[in-house]
Amino acid sequence: MKKRLLAVLACVAMTATLVVGCGGNKGDGSAEGGDNSGGDDVITVGFSQVGAESDWRTANSESMKSTFSKENGYELIFDDAQQKQENQLTAIRNFIQQEVDYIVLAPVTETGWDTVLQEAKDADIPVIIVDRMVDVSDDSLYTAWVGSNFKLEGEKAAEWLNSYAQAKGLSEVNIAHIQGTIGASAQIGRTEGLEAADKYGWNIVAQQTGEFTQAKGQEVMESMLKQYDNINVVYCENDNEAFGAIDAIEAAGKTVGPDGDILVMSFDTTNAGLTDTLSGKIICDTECNPLHGPRVEEIIKQLENGETPEKVAYVEEEMFAYDDTVKDVTVDGTKYDVTKLTQEILDGRAY
Ligand code: GZL
Ligand code: ZN
Image (cartoon, rainbow, N blue to C red; front, side):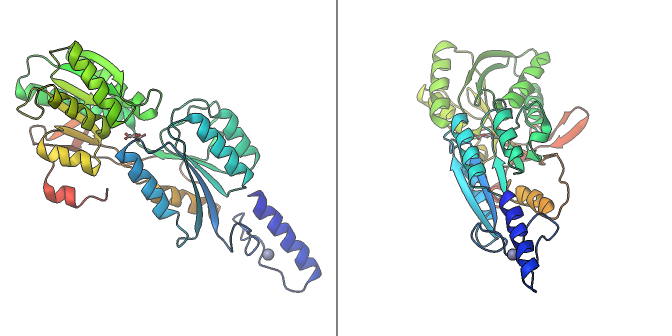
């Protein structure tokens, strides 16, 4: 923003000496022609991405890169933090130095952002948070947030499990809980959703982070199977953990699926996750939509037009299951459909 202000001042100065001005400020804080970030009206976006830990993350990055392309009038500076917060803090400080027009942050975990977001605010650069939430003392430190209601995702999955267990007459539900990255909003919400269901008398026999990765998910499942032989449900907080868990279960000589030893539940509904749902390897996959690019662009367009975007915007999300044993779930009085997955539904999905 500072860069644009200087450009406008330069324009005004030029106008003072020359007959013809340069259009100056379009009233939205952007100066015509004066923008020095690679040409007229190119909007520079610095995006600090968590990493590349999962299929969901890949789809999320792809959505941001295809939206903030040169053809669309943007210069995207993309930084992959390899799941380390200190790398995100460095990236944001670099964006500030480069005087980007907007900073987009996908925070790896919720805490530790106040200082760097204050620096961005002091530099007059709007910050848009995507996906996971930041826990800051003053929410004016970010302009808008768009992402998922992770607690609702967890509650929907837990309600599905309760209905499914009742329909199948499961005498006991012994759950291995493979959590996401501890402190990430997705982990916090999906864990809350499961733990709130202790009213159903389930046993969470084991609980450990799988860090949202396939490798860690497999390692954790292997160790849980060595410790407990009564696990009949695995609640994975994303698809990549589910892929790892399924490999570990099958390597241990057990089976997954509706008629198997263990039911594997998951989140994200990535293409690979839904492929496993079609076969029943994953029995139920709760959607977490990664396509935030267009949503962030909508926010930036509003800001460019001097409008005020919604502070918090949740994306609509569905649920898919291998079969139609459970046709819908109700959470806090609201009913959500559960879709029996078919090949054509899978083929028709955007990610
Ligand atoms: C959820 C996102 C999570 C996904 C994982 O919005 O933060 O991070 O569920 C990803 O696949 O790693
Ligand atoms: Zn000018």
